[in-house]
Image (tube, rainbow, N blue to C red):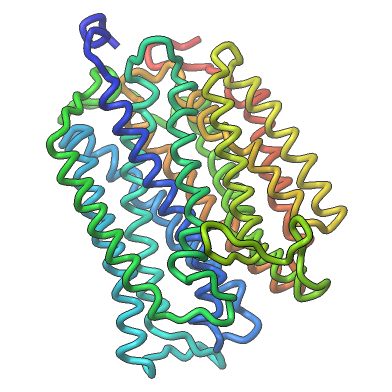
Length: 442
């Protein structure tokens, strides 16, 4: 960043990016939390493949990341950061419209089903999957802008990883609220077997209106581009972005990070429901359920909230760690997450998985900071490439669902998380070393 740009006040743009990070986190987790309710509402006719079909909701969302990351970096070069944000939010409104339409279609045409062998799946379920992909595409493009902007924008008294942690904290507030939104607001605290498809329509219509208001507000805000973080339109980059080894391995690391983060966040409630069916209801402070703000919640919903809430606490703590290098933060958190997951498997206890969120909290910021180190004008393109790795959030939870169906339970499927943590530890120790920068070979 030039001295002239350091004179520009980026407080307003910084706050804007933090708020948009909140929206991304909220919608990402809300989408995953629909797995358990829609498993009951849509998937009664798929027999013993319920877990596999349910995890397709998360798969569809994260499939957008490898397919749309390049779109985000191309739009950033062509339209600038602000123009790209506005277009991505219009795409988000379209995706929320598909969510609304999936419910309306299923109610209007209850006999519209697709027969897959002996399994019966409503067409409305596939419309919902399309909505997941479209909103996921919007979230992808938003993050192609948000991540490099938070890293590069100059806010006095902060470091890049701190700004990423602050944005991540807002993201975590969204992820913490989302399970309550799905179980408490959308489905009114009902037990899973009582969920009705018609409860989807009004909340998604309201979200469409909210995002439209955000778009209108964003159009009036000043959001200056940051020079040196993106290629200008028509400029040819001398090197392939894949020539930077620390970025390439960072993409793989983020594949495993997002994969294991979503495995726990999306599937812990399915694991908890399975444990309840085998061992009886869980208790929390002596109760098998709890009430918050007059809304009734089951314990599995609480577990997901505790996991995402742990990420919020961790990111708030991380935003104050000015002197601890990103590499050290990643080493400590991956080791801690590995130990907790091993204990959860050994003791067959989903409560221990909720604590992993505390250590997953700052991994995204640490991996992104290490991956784009010394990339200069390649940073924006690298951010688009980085999004390819987020497909781990599609593949690993789906693979875990398949394993859970194959092995007759969720317990041993959590070794997927162990493998991912160990690769991230390798990246922190060895893979993040910069052998080549944007300017020189070193």
